[in-house]
Amino acid sequence: MLKIALVDDSVILRSAIKNVLESSGFEIVLEAGSSKELFEKLEKITPSLILLDVFFPTENGLDMLARVKKQYPQLKVLMVTGLKQETIAEEAKRLGADGILYKPFDTDDLLNAVKQVGL
Image (cartoon, rainbow, N blue to C red):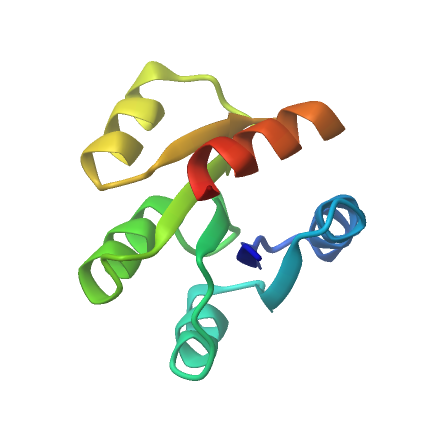
């Protein structure tokens, strides 16, 4: 079973994604709203896939991505963003992102992206 971490500052979005993924048979093993929380939890829990938002109020998801890939190169990372800017996609791929999911997305988009990147 795919073990997933959800990293987004929006509790509402994390909850919605969690509901969709769990009802489709995926296991959510970690939720975090900041890089500090993410890296504290990664010391104890190892997911197979991280869904990581690009923008946070006080931090940058791309910086988190670089740190995840440096410390945990085996982890798959699916970046989530509301901006369809080529520069963000290129930078995410350069830093090691395994995929990008653009907001707004529907249930099928989410499940397809998770399966494509995580399985």
